Image 1: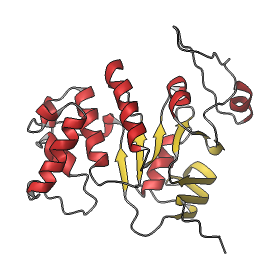
Image 2 (image 1 turned 60 degrees about the vertical axis):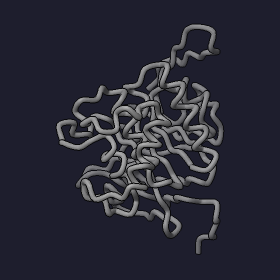
Image 3 (image 1 turned 120 degrees about the horizontal axis):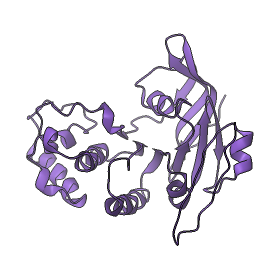
Image 4 (image 1 turned 180 degrees about the vertical axis):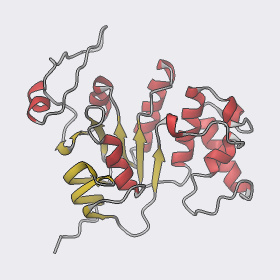
Length: 249
């Protein structure tokens, strides 16, 4: 019998997941605890998005188990390419759709719900977009609206899939400030290709390439990436300390 730890919010036990007969992840052990800020890295097709979709229940695991405490709330910011931008809905209603109660029905929200949504949009510097249809938003504006939606339900765990892809450098820095504020009370799991940015902000790193190897640190060496078959390359210029990792198979 597995011991109960009130600090653990999500636990994957020997989880195998994929699509139909195609296995993407095999025998994954992984846990998310209160206060965690975990960066998920790995090559394209290695299973990063499959991992978070399995955690969220968007796809079912083929074997193994996933344990959550009763009543857990999870916020999710998907890759922006999955959003249907021509759907006739306002930014404020998009944010309200993040409520965990499941009672969103396109206009039947209460004034407090709308007020909360507008406060979040203001906090993310896009309050003026509240009544705009999402089809009118730029990629960066939509990403902020989707972040507001992800935190609308006051989640215990916030899961982000490439959250800075379409934002400019100025807001990227602000987004990480916001994530650090949220991390004071919310565990965060963030998929990113930006190893340099991840290593500056997260507390732990999960290398995903069909299997998963977790490092309880934001420092990861080229040798570790090579050993775990997790090829990444990083090159940064300027005053920020940088690392160059050689390519490996």
